[in-house]
Length: 424
Image 1 (cartoon, rainbow, N blue to C red):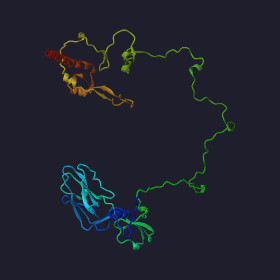
Image 2 (spheres, rainbow, N blue to C red):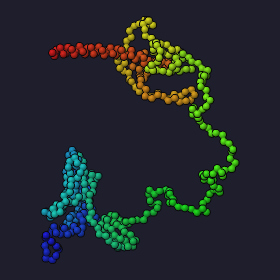
Image 3 (cartoon, rainbow, N blue to C red):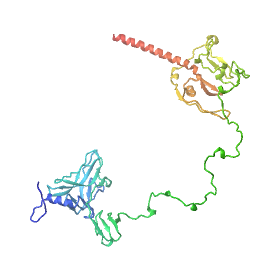
Image 4 (cartoon, rainbow, N blue to C red):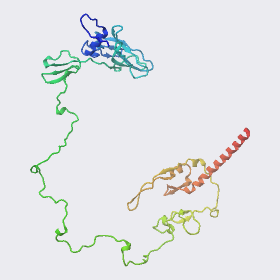
């Protein structure tokens, strides 16, 4: 194990030894306030260049001091943008620290990585430079500073003996004010300054009192009497109670009733075989049963029309009820225009003011759309306005469409047979 100690008289100290020793005393970074511009990087839009102000820096135990503003060229970006880096580059092999521009990768927003070895090349970043696609100059907004500043020692002083040329971040204890303060670049600022209540932001407008108690004598507007709390009494303690008690409202089961009659004659009433004034259609012919309810009795079931005056009539189709029969042209394309929809019925207001909710999710057609499609003969009118649809005639409207499709299928089958015959 080799042990090296230095520096001593008549001893050779290498550059590497000195750098290792000095970097323990001071970190790598720019010295603020030394050399004027502190090596700040900027651009002013005059071509593809950036400028680095004068200043002083320490890079891994080595010093660089610039006394003038340096101009660095930026390579053109072409059709893809990139991000470059302006660096101080320490190269022990050439015994120099120089300014350099590291070009980024085209099309990437990530700047190039820094080379930072222990004994070889070491780079300290001063700024990032965004190079837009096809630009011919670098604007001020394209430069973003990345300088790190060297550390400062902590001192102590009075207001009259503060450091004359402090660096950014210099920290010390002011014995005159008994406060810690630091240099913010332009003035000394307290580490924990006093703040007036009026200057505070976000403070609450009211404060909920903490849990506490009050003496009875301190209370105002207290009542003179207090209603008793909920409590009970023994029956023997009650005075003036009644001798008898009428039963409260109650009920009895049928089996507990005695002397009830064995039969009950019906009260006076009547039945009608047909719809009468004031009845509803659901009560027609004395029945609420739907057809699928297997109504007993013989006979034929009929589709029923309700005429405008309320008269019921069978919906007949026999030729014996018809004359002047002739063809009726229906355009199948009109039928194809029909649009099935699902909809909700609007709520209705009855005569007594009761709101009757409309049925939801009904399926059907819109009468006005059917009329516009050229199928006005399917429309019912009431008081001169469109009112309903003859859904029973939709089957008739579909007949010519089915016939046309049947002809098309027959024609396609014939064509297919002909093609198959040619291929065989």
